[in-house]
Amino acid sequence: MNEIKIDDHIDAHERLALLAIEATDRQDPDVLEEIVDKADNVALLLQLAIAHAEDRALRGEAPGPSAD
Image (cartoon, rainbow, N blue to C red; front, side):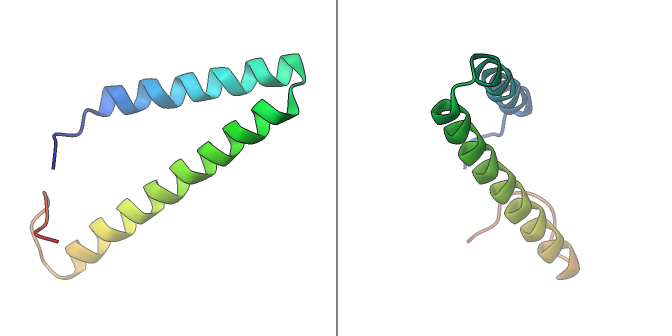
């Protein structure tokens, strides 16, 4: 797996938040709905990543890329 660049991910989330603010200011419900959907997807992926890391820790596996 490619090296995760945390700053790139944070920048992308900040851009998403700024777009949400702009869509709210314009009162553009279609754009705002799309942004909310993407934010929900990001939240679910983060929850999955955290659960995976916790599961590996409980099994005593070392942190880092897994074989699966």
